[in-house]
Length: 326
Image (cartoon, rainbow, N blue to C red; front, side):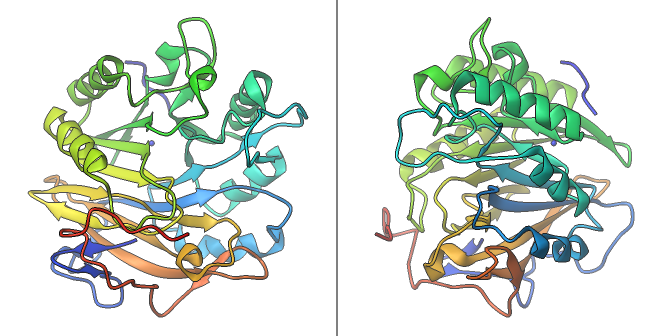
């Protein structure tokens, strides 16, 4: 594997968010030897976004060794759209603004990176490269798409892979000689990629696009995939796509954040505007802990601001298959 130089919510019996007062999962103090990873949800650069509000986010990412987000858009000037309900595109200038606040690793394994077809997707790869923004989940061919990233941070090898269980359709999936994303339903390729990354890494992180839009709870299929990927060697699984916050589970030193919701994104619904920054710490002994900074997307700027608390629906995800906002 080539070396390339990478809610919310804690559910016990009810849908509860650990953010204001960190639980026992949270690190007691900041340790400079810890690897710090900040994770946020969906980001796109549509015209509704007030880009002048983005610089204020820099304060939240200064400590992060990796600052990860889901790039829910194509980055292109191409005008020919795929036939679908929503098509997102933005410019390389927007990418630069994201990088300027510290965001440095994009997941492109999703259902919007191919919104402007093959040309738009190839432009996205070029613009990411030109901006110096790392990415996972897609590439110029299937080999590149499943390759992932490996970072050596404070002596620890962090391997990161992007897997699209929700993608832009069959044409968006990378092949041997065509650019595209990974395919989470290709079990052979997915499991092989995780196994290979495990062999080269001290800690394995999977960024995945999955779940039902508007839902607050993971479905059995997401739980099953998380269990399988953890057994194959994933230490941390970070989800997106639902546009809502879903549970964060830390069990046996394995962390799954089923969905980080939206981040720089427009929506008028409170449940879609409520978001957060998941801060993960990994000690030199590979112990994982986390805290969450509550955020709320400003309805005018469409950019999140610090919040005292998160929108918390009274839902028992352990005993309810799913709850969806319509």
